[in-house]
Image 1 (cartoon, each protein chain N blue to C red):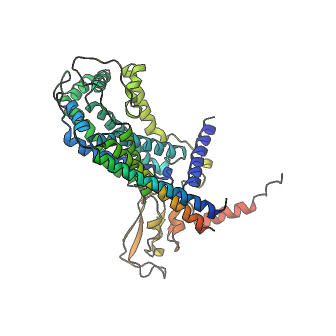
Image 2: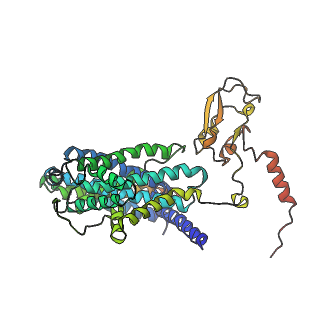
Image 3: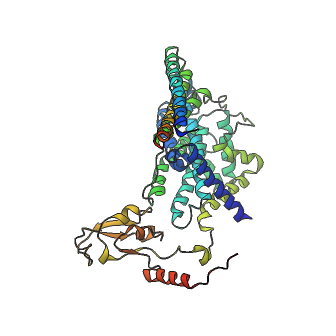
Length: 391
Length: 68
């Protein structure tokens, strides 16, 4: 049942690829650039965030007024605020399409666990940075969200009260609360770039940026939406007042919506379980040797005497698992006699895919458990097997 | 429909978008002149989206001609 559902999801994902390829050109297909689109939105977030930061005053008295001044008093301030607001939504949409696409097409298994895990951590940090952004506006919704956050933190059995005090900067909302929230907004956002390095480090040619057509389209869409649906604040937060309901921005504030249905402790536990499951996904696959097929044949090894230092394997390895180092002695084969470089396999990065073996015209790479003699043996066994009966 | 005819259709559509884009430039100028920042920004957004559509249409039209 699950397997059938999974196959359908995979088939639907691939059909979406084919459909868009027919509609547009393959190199314009946005599904191939979901990571790059997320980067584009992140760049807009950073640039507009810096501009907003120049006007923002992180104090209980000044925060709301500074946001209002930016929106109404600064030329195009409302547009910058809108760009920041809607780029955050675009960022989350791009991330989720990226996540589901890679999930449904099995691009998280084995050596791709590094990308998956770093992606999950990126998602958590992005969600947290976005969520704290809603607290900074300091309108009635912000006040309610802060009190719900404190309630949730206090429901944590061990150290919950301490966390709530650290979050607020004291036993209740005070002058140090908003600077802390601002730090909790900016610090995870800055961390995203370090996490992106982790996300990309094992990829040879990651598509980190979408085609110009999509850059223009997305920027245009952001400007258009920012103008047609300007980002606004609710009523100013009044200390002591306790609004009961708020407008849910579903991409970031769903944990608070969850708290309307569940007790804070259970809502936090559920979020924890979702995150833990997300991190566990790459390790949840259990395959029999038959299902593994020709995978798992051992990491590629360099046959040093044959390596000519041509770098073909270096350029073809999609996992950045082959480095070229200076060669201090010539190879044994004629082609390798004058080499200047030698290929070296970085074992932790090798996924045993065999691409380098196909790339090498000099038989200088091999998978230890699939040598030429093994392949010949498999061919021989195949040739000797009885032919399937005609139906 | 032949490839050539569909190429012509794409070019025609691109021409319509280019003319609409000129309208957007007018709206941007009006927005700036009349201090209607939201109008100007919406027009800029539309212009960028239409420009990207024009690039795709040109590409489709070119390829259709090339395949004839």
